[in-house]
Amino acid sequence: MFEQNLKYLEAEIILAEPRGFCAGVDRAISIVERILEIHGHPIYVKHEIVHNEHVVKNLQNKGVVFVNNICDIPKGRIVIFSAHGVSQSVKNEAYKRKLKVFDATCPLVTKVHREVIRLNKIGREIIMIGHRNHPEVEGTLGQVDKGIIHFVETFKDVNSLKVNNPENLSFVTQTTLSINDSELIIKLLRKKFPNILGPKKDSDICYATQNRQEAVQVLSKSCDLILVIGSKNSSNSNRLCEVAKNEGIQSYLINDESEINSSWLLNSKRIGITAGASAPEILVKNVIVQLKKLGAISVRTIPGLKETVHFPLIKELAI
Image (cartoon, rainbow, N blue to C red):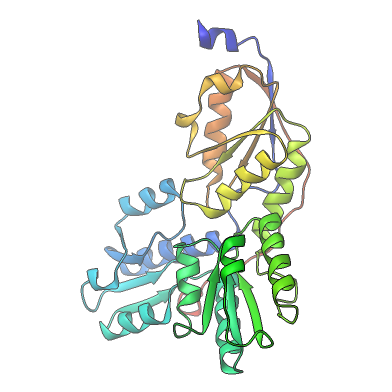
């Protein structure tokens, strides 16, 4: 009876634009699939190639083995570094074990790694803003020796932070942070260390993260409810859900259509949908099908920025 009542809601589905796969995620998955075509299975990936349960399971079914430790890979086998990047120590261990290495690190993450290495070479002390224990953060922190780079996540971290030379500081950021939250942390850092230097655009948050968060802000003006499609361990997907909630909109992060709770729809006439940068479009289509079963009657997309960024495959796989 409950779901029958939903049939009379006549809800409208409104899609965010852009949403879903970014260029870095698309490239990383393509690298794995291309290596499978060339070398067959099994091949190994350090960490999840991207943070999406469906993508990971699909690749596992094709013969990809995901590992947390390089030492779990038999000597001489193929290893792929995930889109999040890895530390220098992980790279060294891979070469020590004589593994055939393919690097699928997102070029925008690699750019941050190179900046950290450059800053270290010119003798600057470095602060990284990010989420604790995230693989991208671990990879970036691991580009230089311990003690050279400091990590902050919260206001408390900034307030308690002690550096060796406040006049010789630079900062970098995780690429998938909340724009608003990072701005507040950066503002506090600048207040505490007036001479601190940052990236040219004031943060390293990537174009895809920024575009999707801005699209959710636009979507929020037209919706009663927003469903964000993405896995629970996806940083950028969690940030999209936070953006919607900060706009005062009821929002839920769902892995797929099976996690939709029909009670959410009771007072919703306009249901917004977006997807994190590691969520494939098929998940969006499946959610739409499920919402139609629960009473939605139309679908439209809010016009948004058309992304044209494309990252070529690594040179070893170039066709």
